[in-house]
Picture 1 (cartoon, rainbow, N blue to C red):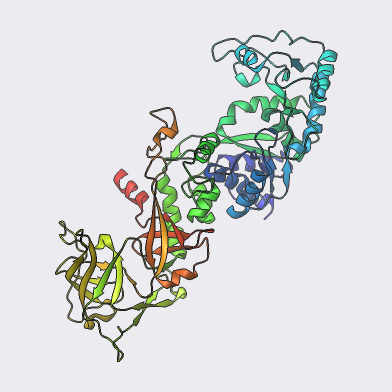
Picture 2: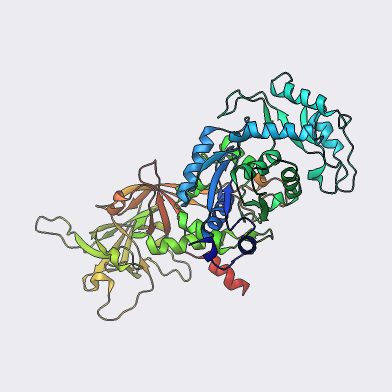
Length: 563
């Protein structure tokens, strides 16, 4: 597809790109970039930006690069760079190039000298607190620095001495000379450079002078040939500064255009890197890939398909209005995709033994073993069936039995008949208890005429239950998850999202029994435990399954209530 054949615009950003192509603004060239800072792991909010950046480039036959915004040596590490590359590939995208803001440190420094020569930048000897206070605020005028009118030659000499490491951290900064009374706070003489005597993960100790985000960002776009610099909405007020810098520099090509869109926020979720880091360092979660975390590696470990995340980001659309999406909507997309692809298996998470007292034995007196064909995925007949063994001792879910059943309890109880999925009708005849009165076994009889779960005389049962053969079962563990944050909008009432942490966000079950076929599950694959939900096999821990989502579509229920 060529740029001239680009699809009809689908949102306001694509409208802008489409119009630029129609007008020949960039000679029908489209180039975007995804510019994360390598100071942490990517999360679900980044996924939206990735889908937008790479998606628009693809729609208009353009290119999208990954540019690591590595301008802060104190917080950035190679580990984060590697993880960002890995997560982008997992999400299904391949950058045309992998670039770094640090590639342009010399060019940025030279352009800073250009602004100093032009009388548009100056060295300020004041500390950060003083500079911040002098900037004023909305409705409060700014105060000009006493160093604002230093001669260019003196500023240039000081700036070069700053670059050679002569001055300590925090002693001086370079500021753009714009307008201390401007209504846009970003234009009140913003800081361009600060002194940091710290080793950089790529440039080592070559520099002790590091550019701010605003100084590096637009200029890096221009150096690379970016046409449309797509940012989240919090950078809306930065656009005037973005444009001011570009207008006062000898650019190598066209001036890129910054466009802002609403970032992705989810209910019951926090995406602040600082807050997520605290969860990790305080041991509240087990690391950045904890399945409760909104990081891409956490979602991957939990079993979220990359395709579901991409589809969700597309379905919610790209707008300029901030809103928080319901996490149930994301889970619904995940569930919808897994329903089509996940293999079905039977697993008992809280096992209770069932003994069939009238089960036949063979000539040696051993209980007979039968096998029943069970569909691997009724949504895809091509997946075929598997044979599941069945004998006299089984496991069912403890919750599927009640010695004294409450109203509307239709599962197994004394004197009640139920269907065992794909096998037989059974009727409870007795229970066995230990000395403490706990039920250890349930005794039943089976009706051999109901093989396959059908009733030849047409009698009805109100419950069908899953099971596993005790003799053939495999031991496993399962992690069940609730919301990491109990509040729909974490921190809204208290001011600190961590005050809304859910202490019961994970339940680990270590005595599960699952059918033997699950022992062949590939780590990372997701299967459906019948009646229980979708579960992903942990990549590191053998036979540990993480519940990805349950079977019940909460988002559909919410929509029905809203109608």
